[in-house]
Image (cartoon, rainbow, N blue to C red):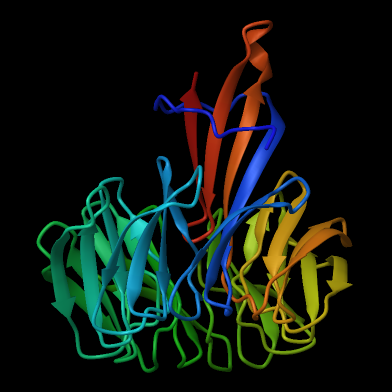
Length: 370
């Protein structure tokens, strides 16, 4: 190949004027494989075979990518060449995605266990058994881990000791990831409500009824919540818990909405990917793919990267397909995107900036390397 992954010296950088150079997309498929593609043209870089379907969104930390599989394992993979550094087996299949606080990796399994592993060596630090199955992805919030379960409960857990700090009972299974915005925690329940809690103690601030169960995750952006219920309605909810708009999609969606530059992107089971104006709910564009779209979109540089049940991973810009990459199984895993960007603010002394965009958490991590 004519390019290599650069070596990285880690320092956090502020947002600068940048030029996109290259990006690498990591995602899983129901064909049991984790793929790494070039974001520019969809060319494959490497692939790693697991023992069963990969429904989780990979999480990148340094030179490594962490991904869970329904084969009851977590994998630590070298970003540059796809070499597996370590893998660990747990008690049950894993549907949710791994997350990290920078030194540990957290995830749950359907047997109801929440795990904490050392990110570098893969040593298990602790595990916690709760009453219900875990299909959701954990959230790291300061010294807490927040995780919803099928026993209708959202748990706040001490991330160092693995002890329950507080819990909040809803009236339905919690299948999606909780989101933290400031001092508030938001989550969706199969009882049809979006809940807003105090992050410190789990006390209820408000709840908003969306009139039907909410199976997927919701997104919080600038104080607004975006969520889809099983009847196929996309909602926008303000910080007071009031519905500001709702739009009927063609069908139910398991895709988690993603908001970028005032646009809400979401996939749907009617084969379409939709883009809506986040403020007013106006349809910006939609594009029909070759199957149900149940994965979470990854958006960067005006392009939407998303998997489809037809086995293809797509790159879309302004409602048009730029390229697609074929796998041998449905793709319900969202992608983790590593971007290499040029800092143009330093004149002739060009530096590179590495951005890992985690669509598990919706956060952007910026790192400078030389």
